[in-house]
Length: 355
Image (tube, rainbow, N blue to C red; front, side, top):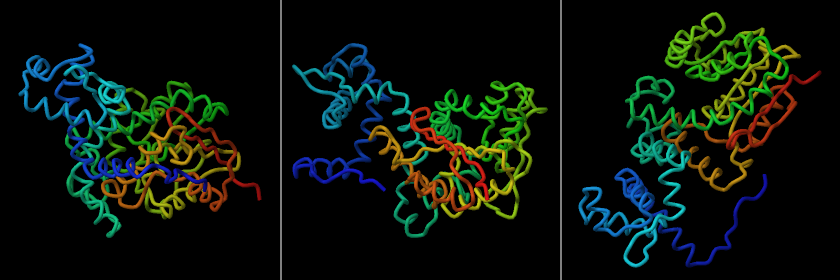
Protein backbone atom coordinates (compact mmCIF):
# COMPACT_ATOMS: atom_id res chain seq x y z
CA UNK A 1 0.00 0.00 0.00
CA UNK A 2 1.47 3.35 -1.03
CA UNK A 3 1.71 6.23 1.41
CA UNK A 4 -0.96 8.93 1.49
CA UNK A 5 -0.49 12.43 2.88
CA UNK A 6 2.08 13.75 5.34
CA UNK A 7 2.30 15.90 8.48
CA UNK A 8 4.27 18.84 7.12
CA UNK A 9 1.70 21.60 7.66
CA UNK A 10 2.49 24.42 10.07
CA UNK A 11 1.09 24.49 13.59
CA UNK A 12 -1.05 27.50 12.65
CA UNK A 13 -2.54 25.67 9.66
CA UNK A 14 -3.04 22.52 11.71
CA UNK A 15 -4.94 24.51 14.35
CA UNK A 16 -7.16 26.12 11.69
CA UNK A 17 -7.91 22.72 10.16
CA UNK A 18 -8.77 21.37 13.61
CA UNK A 19 -11.31 24.16 14.12
CA UNK A 20 -12.83 23.41 10.72
CA UNK A 21 -13.42 19.87 11.96
CA UNK A 22 -14.71 21.00 15.36
CA UNK A 23 -17.33 23.28 13.83
CA UNK A 24 -17.86 21.25 10.64
CA UNK A 25 -21.55 20.32 11.12
CA UNK A 26 -22.50 23.91 11.97
CA UNK A 27 -20.65 25.38 9.01
CA UNK A 28 -22.11 22.75 6.68
CA UNK A 29 -25.57 24.07 7.55
CA UNK A 30 -24.39 27.62 6.87
CA UNK A 31 -23.11 26.60 3.43
CA UNK A 32 -26.36 24.82 2.66
CA UNK A 33 -28.40 27.85 3.79
CA UNK A 34 -26.34 30.20 1.65
CA UNK A 35 -27.18 27.97 -1.29
CA UNK A 36 -30.81 27.21 -0.53
CA UNK A 37 -31.86 30.76 0.41
CA UNK A 38 -30.58 32.16 -2.88
CA UNK A 39 -27.71 34.23 -1.47
CA UNK A 40 -25.03 32.54 -3.56
CA UNK A 41 -27.20 32.77 -6.64
CA UNK A 42 -27.70 36.50 -6.06
CA UNK A 43 -23.93 37.03 -5.89
CA UNK A 44 -23.46 34.98 -9.04
CA UNK A 45 -26.09 36.98 -10.94
CA UNK A 46 -25.01 40.42 -9.68
CA UNK A 47 -21.24 39.85 -9.24
CA UNK A 48 -21.34 41.42 -5.75
CA UNK A 49 -23.72 42.68 -3.08
CA UNK A 50 -24.01 44.27 0.35
CA UNK A 51 -25.84 42.62 3.23
CA UNK A 52 -28.70 45.12 3.04
CA UNK A 53 -29.06 44.86 -0.74
CA UNK A 54 -29.13 41.07 -0.67
CA UNK A 55 -31.57 40.95 2.24
CA UNK A 56 -33.94 43.34 0.50
CA UNK A 57 -33.76 41.55 -2.84
CA UNK A 58 -34.42 38.12 -1.28
CA UNK A 59 -36.92 39.32 1.34
CA UNK A 60 -34.74 37.95 4.14
CA UNK A 61 -33.87 39.46 7.54
CA UNK A 62 -30.68 41.56 7.50
CA UNK A 63 -29.50 39.74 10.61
CA UNK A 64 -29.81 36.31 8.98
CA UNK A 65 -28.03 37.36 5.80
CA UNK A 66 -25.27 38.95 7.88
CA UNK A 67 -24.45 35.88 9.98
CA UNK A 68 -24.55 33.58 6.96
CA UNK A 69 -22.27 35.75 4.83
CA UNK A 70 -19.82 36.20 7.70
CA UNK A 71 -19.71 32.42 8.07
CA UNK A 72 -19.21 32.32 4.31
CA UNK A 73 -16.02 34.33 4.77
CA UNK A 74 -14.50 31.62 6.97
CA UNK A 75 -15.85 28.97 4.62
CA UNK A 76 -14.04 30.85 1.83
CA UNK A 77 -17.24 30.79 -0.20
CA UNK A 78 -17.27 34.59 -0.40
CA UNK A 79 -14.81 37.43 0.16
CA UNK A 80 -15.37 41.02 1.24
CA UNK A 81 -14.28 44.10 -0.71
CA UNK A 82 -15.49 47.67 -0.11
CA UNK A 83 -18.27 46.35 2.17
CA UNK A 84 -19.65 44.13 -0.56
CA UNK A 85 -19.49 40.35 -0.78
CA UNK A 86 -18.18 38.55 -3.86
CA UNK A 87 -18.55 34.87 -4.75
CA UNK A 88 -15.38 32.75 -4.71
CA UNK A 89 -14.60 29.64 -6.77
CA UNK A 90 -15.54 27.51 -3.76
CA UNK A 91 -18.86 29.34 -3.50
CA UNK A 92 -19.45 28.69 -7.18
CA UNK A 93 -18.87 24.94 -6.66
CA UNK A 94 -21.41 24.92 -3.83
CA UNK A 95 -23.87 26.78 -6.05
CA UNK A 96 -23.48 25.14 -9.45
CA UNK A 97 -21.26 22.05 -9.34
CA UNK A 98 -23.43 18.97 -9.83
CA UNK A 99 -21.28 16.45 -7.88
CA UNK A 100 -20.98 18.87 -4.96
CA UNK A 101 -24.73 19.39 -4.81
CA UNK A 102 -25.46 15.67 -5.08
CA UNK A 103 -23.03 15.06 -2.21
CA UNK A 104 -24.49 17.86 -0.07
CA UNK A 105 -28.08 16.68 -0.51
CA UNK A 106 -27.03 13.09 0.24
CA UNK A 107 -25.25 14.29 3.38
CA UNK A 108 -28.22 16.37 4.53
CA UNK A 109 -31.16 14.15 3.67
CA UNK A 110 -29.74 10.66 4.19
CA UNK A 111 -26.87 11.06 6.65
CA UNK A 112 -27.11 14.20 8.77
CA UNK A 113 -29.12 12.81 11.68
CA UNK A 114 -27.95 9.24 11.22
CA UNK A 115 -24.21 9.95 11.35
CA UNK A 116 -24.61 11.10 14.95
CA UNK A 117 -24.74 7.37 15.73
CA UNK A 118 -21.32 6.65 14.18
CA UNK A 119 -19.55 5.86 17.45
CA UNK A 120 -22.11 3.26 18.53
CA UNK A 121 -22.10 1.85 15.00
CA UNK A 122 -18.33 1.33 15.24
CA UNK A 123 -18.62 -0.31 18.67
CA UNK A 124 -21.62 -2.50 17.84
CA UNK A 125 -20.77 -3.34 14.23
CA UNK A 126 -24.30 -2.35 13.18
CA UNK A 127 -25.73 0.65 11.26
CA UNK A 128 -27.15 2.28 14.39
CA UNK A 129 -27.95 5.48 12.50
CA UNK A 130 -30.41 3.68 10.24
CA UNK A 131 -33.07 4.00 12.94
CA UNK A 132 -33.33 7.68 11.95
CA UNK A 133 -34.67 6.56 8.55
CA UNK A 134 -36.62 3.39 9.29
CA UNK A 135 -36.77 0.08 11.08
CA UNK A 136 -34.70 -2.17 8.79
CA UNK A 137 -31.53 -4.23 9.17
CA UNK A 138 -29.95 -2.49 6.16
CA UNK A 139 -30.95 0.51 4.10
CA UNK A 140 -31.30 -1.65 0.98
CA UNK A 141 -34.29 -3.45 2.43
CA UNK A 142 -36.07 -0.14 2.96
CA UNK A 143 -35.04 1.83 -0.14
CA UNK A 144 -38.46 1.62 -1.75
CA UNK A 145 -40.09 2.79 1.51
CA UNK A 146 -37.96 5.88 2.15
CA UNK A 147 -39.71 9.27 2.18
CA UNK A 148 -39.62 10.78 -1.29
CA UNK A 149 -37.08 13.53 -0.56
CA UNK A 150 -34.68 11.12 1.12
CA UNK A 151 -35.19 8.51 -1.59
CA UNK A 152 -34.49 11.10 -4.29
CA UNK A 153 -31.23 12.20 -2.64
CA UNK A 154 -30.15 8.57 -2.21
CA UNK A 155 -30.83 7.59 -5.81
CA UNK A 156 -29.41 10.87 -7.16
CA UNK A 157 -26.18 10.07 -5.31
CA UNK A 158 -26.13 6.44 -6.43
CA UNK A 159 -27.04 7.07 -10.07
CA UNK A 160 -24.95 10.20 -10.63
CA UNK A 161 -21.64 8.41 -10.27
CA UNK A 162 -22.66 5.22 -12.06
CA UNK A 163 -24.33 7.08 -14.95
CA UNK A 164 -21.07 8.83 -15.81
CA UNK A 165 -19.43 5.47 -16.49
CA UNK A 166 -21.88 4.02 -18.99
CA UNK A 167 -20.50 5.63 -22.17
CA UNK A 168 -17.06 4.22 -21.33
CA UNK A 169 -18.00 0.75 -20.17
CA UNK A 170 -20.62 -0.38 -22.68
CA UNK A 171 -18.15 -0.67 -25.61
CA UNK A 172 -15.79 -2.67 -23.38
CA UNK A 173 -18.39 -5.09 -22.03
CA UNK A 174 -20.02 -5.65 -25.43
CA UNK A 175 -16.78 -5.96 -27.37
CA UNK A 176 -17.08 -9.74 -27.09
CA UNK A 177 -20.77 -9.66 -28.15
CA UNK A 178 -22.23 -11.46 -25.12
CA UNK A 179 -25.63 -13.04 -25.69
CA UNK A 180 -26.66 -12.97 -22.04
CA UNK A 181 -25.69 -10.93 -18.98
CA UNK A 182 -26.40 -11.50 -15.29
CA UNK A 183 -26.69 -8.14 -13.48
CA UNK A 184 -26.09 -8.90 -9.80
CA UNK A 185 -27.53 -6.10 -7.70
CA UNK A 186 -29.27 -4.57 -10.70
CA UNK A 187 -31.32 -2.19 -8.53
CA UNK A 188 -33.87 -0.24 -10.62
CA UNK A 189 -32.83 -1.89 -13.89
CA UNK A 190 -31.24 1.25 -15.29
CA UNK A 191 -28.07 -0.47 -16.52
CA UNK A 192 -30.01 -3.41 -17.94
CA UNK A 193 -32.24 -1.07 -19.95
CA UNK A 194 -29.20 0.75 -21.33
CA UNK A 195 -27.63 -2.57 -22.35
CA UNK A 196 -30.69 -3.49 -24.39
CA UNK A 197 -30.45 -0.18 -26.23
CA UNK A 198 -26.75 -0.66 -26.88
CA UNK A 199 -27.09 -4.25 -28.07
CA UNK A 200 -30.40 -5.21 -29.74
CA UNK A 201 -30.08 -8.93 -29.02
CA UNK A 202 -28.60 -9.31 -25.51
CA UNK A 203 -30.80 -10.82 -22.80
CA UNK A 204 -30.37 -9.83 -19.18
CA UNK A 205 -31.27 -11.29 -15.80
CA UNK A 206 -31.31 -8.99 -12.77
CA UNK A 207 -30.71 -10.40 -9.28
CA UNK A 208 -31.68 -8.23 -6.32
CA UNK A 209 -33.73 -7.95 -3.15
CA UNK A 210 -37.52 -8.08 -3.63
CA UNK A 211 -38.01 -4.32 -3.17
CA UNK A 212 -35.50 -3.38 -5.84
CA UNK A 213 -36.53 -6.24 -8.13
CA UNK A 214 -40.14 -5.02 -8.03
CA UNK A 215 -39.05 -1.52 -9.04
CA UNK A 216 -36.92 -3.01 -11.83
CA UNK A 217 -39.86 -5.08 -13.09
CA UNK A 218 -42.04 -1.98 -13.29
CA UNK A 219 -39.37 -0.09 -15.25
CA UNK A 220 -38.88 -3.08 -17.56
CA UNK A 221 -42.63 -3.33 -18.18
CA UNK A 222 -42.86 0.42 -18.84
CA UNK A 223 -40.16 -0.01 -21.48
CA UNK A 224 -41.90 -3.04 -23.00
CA UNK A 225 -38.80 -5.22 -22.57
CA UNK A 226 -40.16 -8.15 -20.56
CA UNK A 227 -39.03 -10.51 -23.33
CA UNK A 228 -35.37 -9.44 -22.93
CA UNK A 229 -34.97 -8.54 -19.23
CA UNK A 230 -36.13 -10.51 -16.23
CA UNK A 231 -35.75 -9.65 -12.54
CA UNK A 232 -35.33 -12.37 -9.93
CA UNK A 233 -35.88 -11.87 -6.18
CA UNK A 234 -33.02 -13.25 -4.12
CA UNK A 235 -31.19 -12.89 -0.84
CA UNK A 236 -27.73 -11.97 -2.06
CA UNK A 237 -26.24 -12.69 1.36
CA UNK A 238 -27.37 -16.33 1.35
CA UNK A 239 -24.42 -18.26 -0.05
CA UNK A 240 -26.56 -21.40 -0.31
CA UNK A 241 -28.48 -19.80 -3.19
CA UNK A 242 -26.40 -20.24 -6.37
CA UNK A 243 -26.29 -17.69 -9.16
CA UNK A 244 -28.03 -18.86 -12.34
CA UNK A 245 -25.65 -20.42 -14.84
CA UNK A 246 -25.29 -20.02 -18.58
CA UNK A 247 -24.56 -16.29 -18.85
CA UNK A 248 -21.68 -14.95 -20.93
CA UNK A 249 -21.11 -12.07 -18.50
CA UNK A 250 -21.68 -11.57 -14.78
CA UNK A 251 -21.83 -7.89 -13.92
CA UNK A 252 -21.46 -6.11 -10.55
CA UNK A 253 -21.59 -2.32 -10.67
CA UNK A 254 -21.16 -0.12 -7.57
CA UNK A 255 -22.26 -3.22 -5.72
CA UNK A 256 -19.46 -4.75 -3.70
CA UNK A 257 -19.05 -1.63 -1.57
CA UNK A 258 -22.39 -2.66 -0.02
CA UNK A 259 -20.83 -5.75 1.60
CA UNK A 260 -18.09 -6.81 3.99
CA UNK A 261 -14.96 -8.48 2.63
CA UNK A 262 -16.21 -11.85 3.86
CA UNK A 263 -19.54 -11.32 2.12
CA UNK A 264 -17.80 -10.20 -1.08
CA UNK A 265 -15.80 -13.41 -1.07
CA UNK A 266 -19.06 -15.38 -0.92
CA UNK A 267 -20.50 -13.38 -3.83
CA UNK A 268 -17.36 -13.88 -5.92
CA UNK A 269 -17.37 -17.62 -5.22
CA UNK A 270 -20.94 -17.89 -6.47
CA UNK A 271 -19.99 -15.90 -9.57
CA UNK A 272 -17.05 -18.28 -10.13
CA UNK A 273 -19.28 -21.34 -9.81
CA UNK A 274 -21.86 -19.90 -12.23
CA UNK A 275 -19.43 -19.02 -15.05
CA UNK A 276 -17.96 -21.17 -17.78
CA UNK A 277 -14.24 -20.79 -18.59
CA UNK A 278 -14.91 -18.66 -21.65
CA UNK A 279 -17.29 -16.26 -19.82
CA UNK A 280 -16.28 -12.99 -18.12
CA UNK A 281 -16.85 -11.45 -14.71
CA UNK A 282 -16.87 -7.62 -14.58
CA UNK A 283 -16.57 -5.49 -11.45
CA UNK A 284 -17.11 -1.74 -11.66
CA UNK A 285 -16.09 0.05 -8.48
CA UNK A 286 -14.57 3.21 -7.00
CA UNK A 287 -11.33 2.49 -5.14
CA UNK A 288 -10.02 5.26 -2.92
CA UNK A 289 -6.35 4.54 -3.69
CA UNK A 290 -6.83 4.87 -7.47
CA UNK A 291 -8.32 8.38 -7.56
CA UNK A 292 -6.76 11.13 -9.64
CA UNK A 293 -7.83 13.97 -7.35
CA UNK A 294 -7.70 14.40 -3.57
CA UNK A 295 -11.33 15.59 -3.61
CA UNK A 296 -12.42 12.17 -4.88
CA UNK A 297 -10.44 10.31 -2.22
CA UNK A 298 -11.92 12.58 0.47
CA UNK A 299 -15.44 11.92 -0.80
CA UNK A 300 -14.92 8.17 -0.84
CA UNK A 301 -13.54 8.13 2.72
CA UNK A 302 -16.62 10.09 3.85
CA UNK A 303 -18.90 7.69 1.98
CA UNK A 304 -17.34 4.77 3.86
CA UNK A 305 -18.70 6.26 7.08
CA UNK A 306 -22.20 6.35 5.56
CA UNK A 307 -21.90 2.58 5.06
CA UNK A 308 -20.75 2.20 8.67
CA UNK A 309 -23.49 4.24 10.37
CA UNK A 310 -26.40 4.07 7.92
CA UNK A 311 -26.26 1.47 5.15
CA UNK A 312 -25.20 -1.82 6.72
CA UNK A 313 -22.50 -1.37 9.37
CA UNK A 314 -19.82 -3.52 7.74
CA UNK A 315 -18.84 -2.24 4.29
CA UNK A 316 -16.89 0.66 2.82
CA UNK A 317 -15.26 2.15 -0.26
CA UNK A 318 -12.33 -0.22 -0.57
CA UNK A 319 -8.62 -0.03 -1.35
CA UNK A 320 -8.10 -1.88 -4.64
CA UNK A 321 -5.75 -4.41 -3.03
CA UNK A 322 -8.56 -5.63 -0.76
CA UNK A 323 -10.63 -6.69 -3.77
CA UNK A 324 -7.78 -7.91 -5.97
CA UNK A 325 -6.79 -10.28 -3.18
CA UNK A 326 -10.27 -11.83 -3.04
CA UNK A 327 -10.40 -12.09 -6.84
CA UNK A 328 -7.32 -14.30 -6.72
CA UNK A 329 -8.43 -16.30 -3.69
CA UNK A 330 -11.67 -17.51 -5.31
CA UNK A 331 -9.95 -18.62 -8.53
CA UNK A 332 -10.25 -15.66 -10.90
CA UNK A 333 -7.44 -13.84 -12.67
CA UNK A 334 -7.57 -10.21 -13.78
CA UNK A 335 -7.82 -10.19 -17.57
CA UNK A 336 -8.16 -6.42 -17.99
CA UNK A 337 -8.20 -3.40 -15.69
CA UNK A 338 -9.42 0.01 -16.84
CA UNK A 339 -8.79 2.97 -14.52
CA UNK A 340 -10.58 6.33 -14.48
CA UNK A 341 -13.80 5.13 -16.03
CA UNK A 342 -16.34 7.95 -15.83
CA UNK A 343 -15.49 10.26 -12.95
CA UNK A 344 -13.73 7.93 -10.54
CA UNK A 345 -14.34 4.25 -11.31
CA UNK A 346 -12.21 1.26 -12.17
CA UNK A 347 -13.47 -1.59 -14.36
CA UNK A 348 -11.98 -5.02 -13.67
CA UNK A 349 -12.53 -7.87 -16.09
CA UNK A 350 -11.92 -11.33 -14.62
CA UNK A 351 -11.62 -14.79 -16.12
CA UNK A 352 -11.49 -18.16 -14.44
CA UNK A 353 -7.92 -19.26 -13.79
CA UNK A 354 -6.74 -22.00 -16.12
CA UNK A 355 -5.83 -24.97 -13.94
